[in-house]
Amino acid sequence: MSRATYIMIGGFLGAGKTTGILKLAEQLNGRGLRVGLITNDQSFGLVDTALLGARGFPVEEITGGCFCCRFNSLVEASRKLTREARPDVFIAEPVGSCTDLVATVSYPLRRIYGDDFRVAPLSVLVDPIRALRVLGLEAGKVFSSKVLYVYRKQLEEARIIVINKADLLTPERLGNLRAALAREFREAEQFVVSAREGTGLEPWFARITSGEQGSGAPPEVDYDLYAEGEALLGWLNCTVRIAGEAPFDGNALLCALARRIGGRLEEQGLEVAHLKMTLIPDEGRDIGVCNLARGDGRAEQSHTLAEPLESGRLIVNLRAEGDPDDLRAAALDALEAAAQAETAVRCDVEHIEHFRPARPVPTHRMV
Image (cartoon, rainbow, N blue to C red; front, side, top):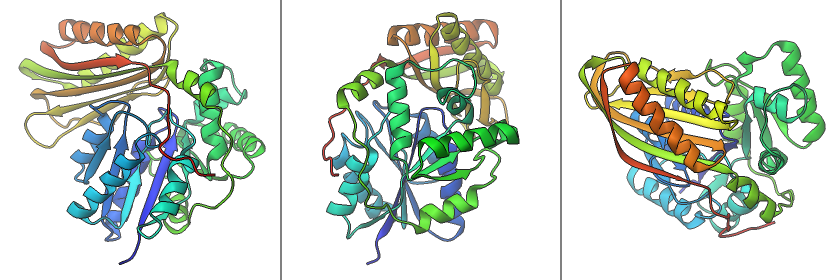
């Protein structure tokens, strides 16, 4: 029996990992390969799982911690996908606030389950606007130093750094970013893509589907500082039943919610790491997805609803540096205001939780 390929695509919150994974899965599918996807979150109710599942791919979701802390669950998810779909390729998307993935996931997979998996080199995606600010090349709001410790550690352990959303930059700004990344992270290969536009993807895809994770020593990680940085991020997952008195524009509702949530947090001085929402109508297979990757950014729809809907399920995933209570208040206020002002809809919250991530405790760490 041939080994399946295991591809892990990391990157900080809002870097565009899910869009890249979806494009890779579609390309592999087009080559006749079976693909299994594994998503990851600190809790359940994940937009990514709903989106990838809606596109017809078999998906398993690992909740309650990062892959590093839920390694056995990751292996079991792979086994379940193998029983049900027999994938040739597994694509795993770790939590966007997680780092030290080579030592805690890639190496254990290779050493313990090397007969089952060929482990591809770790790719880390970056949002170019945030990266320019983090590297001090441009002005703009950034996270506090402890959160940036996690961000930089992700880049330090990357075998491949993928500058995503390249369509947002002029050639000069892109050149400045590439040069700075090459200076600071000399061991990493670079690829420039726009997953949204579908440009530059083929060379990156060829590299990760044919290469293997090397044996170099992973970077040292101060787990106290890592835990403090991750815990500064507030986390909110919310599921809402949406129903209108008449068919309503779900795209307008998503955009209105994103504007209101982002505006509320900006007023409080809280930096958005990522706001992602999906609206799934009760009828049909349509899906709407809206993202806000930075507090001063613009809400964007990666998937638009083709028709008005009467009812559906809204999933909200919000991550920002700030008090989780403030995230909860912003989300609930936006739901109430949007229902009253934008559309004649009723919003019934079915599930909501807000918290700070717990300290990461890896199942394995192999160096």
